[in-house]
Image: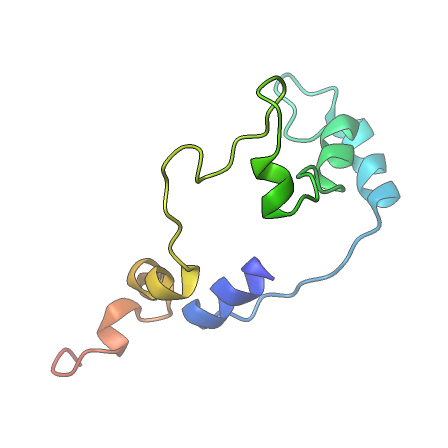
Length: 106
């Protein structure tokens, strides 16, 4: 979903395809023998699952201090929706960059 959002803003049309984890693991088994592997079977397992706990905001607030999952609120961080700031950073990756949006540069 995030990739599609970024591609929409940047005007790119990449080819996206879903590859089964078992196929990716096969390639990872070969790549794991490199000196500095870019992918290992363990990383494929990690990338294949969501590792954020499914909890409501009330369950987060009711956590005991030991083994607490910190939230942005606990760290005094206020979130900003990506829709508000994404264009400010991503427009430069469009074909033609920011020049395609500005008048007088062509």
